[in-house]
Length: 400
Image 1 (cartoon, rainbow, N blue to C red):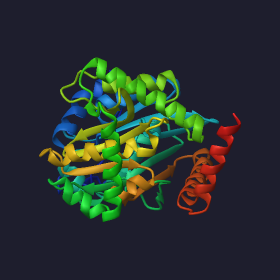
Image 2: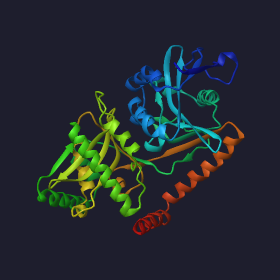
Image 3: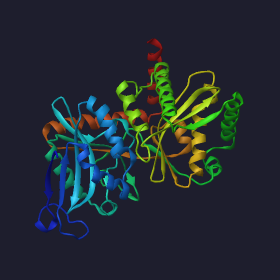
């Protein structure tokens, strides 16, 4: 077992640490470099505590074994115990850039939000002094110059998130969320005007009129293969046409998705939905379902004679019909990015980026990273600059 650990003294010792819930027992932070060594605690917190599916063992493992290894990232999984009970797990990774060792969430580059995995009682009561001690211990053990906590929800599960630190900056993009009623028509009426509803339903009728109209949530290996191949092909063509960066353009990135889609766990960590019209897949959606929430991760549309009928929007409409009818689902998480189609269905939820420097090198990089985050936020939230960026991308794509 590859790990090191350090106790965090309780308040009774007279240090800056804080006893939790009136108990005097010390917290202990252990750092593991092998993901498998943490699986039991990880799974326990996922099943009984507070977490999000982008930080499940299956998701993070798939990312690390593919994109993480390609990027040269070293795992540093922090498990916090009170006595013999795991109360917090932070799936972190260390990356060295220009001699600066930065610790950040594993997979944050290809996820939507980061929360950590918490014991419910500990999450409800954890205070800032306690969190500071935990993070300081984590970074000392990992030899980090800088800690970067990206895309942490400002508020989560009824309280301000403890990992949103003092001085946190807004993340470049929010996530979009909305509660799901059991009746889809209620949701549709609340979120769309009468004319917008008529327009979408007209496009659905036009697609159905083509024939062979099928909405598929892939279950078999063949359906998964077809859905993933269509997703990759459509994303590639969209990137070439519009100049939009494609996060899944490499074989390694596709391998990451394939591992999630083909996982043999009781509940797959990722599903691919697709809309088949006239014998061809016209749109895909990658979605997750976890703890009452359906998460939209990524999507694609075909650029063909059906594009004018918005197959991506129609597929999502069909997915929402299914989600509202599913008694186990009560929340929609539309993921990162302030796209118009997301704003039509859901409301923005603020995310925050926090940075702590532990060395002078870390302080320099912190300044650069905060400036970069501020610039991205300013551009993405500008009614002039963001459309300009998109036009320039499209123009450059036309030159290639």
